[in-house]
Length: 395
Image 1: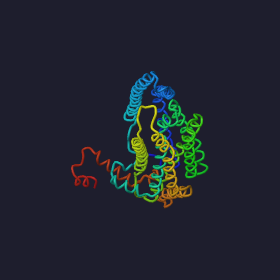
Image 2: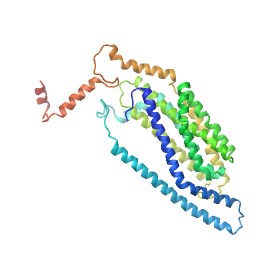
Image 3: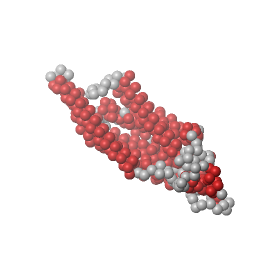
Image 4: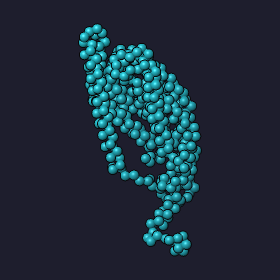
């Protein structure tokens, strides 16, 4: 997608895309929660009765059979939820391919490859502000995904709040969406880095309180709201900082064009890489601590592992990300200087009294002229058989 040339225009576009991502997360959690939530509640109720029952009671066998049936029903519910979400995904793909017309931007050079893809990637990953932003976002995102990725198991086995899991997830995602206007307001007043530090710093106390006071549902819900607000700050501000990095790259590499998609694609890649890494690490840790799926009680080692994965590990990762953000070189003054440099480059021809076509500053009029000539030659009927006749006719 071709974004606007001005950072002030591209930032709202990036924020809009981020808001849509939060909305689809909320929609997916709502749909899945409505389908599978009832079975989680039934399992939590059955496990609660089992915990308070006599192990020698004849009714113990009935409870065990009920848990087995509930597990099968839960599996079928997840399959149904997956089919529903896959149907929505397929519908969105149809809208994308049939309803969106893809075309090159005016005077775009993407149809004439000027730089190999790997060369462009090497230039992007060698840009210092981008590397620090990406790795800061990677560690911070890994912290959130490590904690939120284990929240279902943490609620089910470490807190006893498994029956309220779907409500907690909906509250958390809703808080993420509703906190965006607040962080946007603070961003305009305090700056991006200061607002990011404030947003990330409230996450650590929230997870610590949830681990220490895990038996209280009101406390857990309130801390989940704070966690969701912190997630909104991370998502909003990091996507707002990315256009500044792109502008800084343009100032330092004026001859490199059409590399903006590489910036955004690598940024998304590391975000998804963090999600996969958090799932892999959590799975390995729970496997070696003796996690048993489908049971009501887990060994003490598993409970301890869930508590560590929910709070201490994410806090360490988050502090690492915040440390990397300290070395991020583009502050508000630097951002204003970048905008002045871009404006100076855009108005160079105007200040030198050079008459050019009325085109946006990022479009090269000379390339436009050659492109028009090339298209005219290619569209000529009949086509020229060779260059000799072409030059002879044009002469």
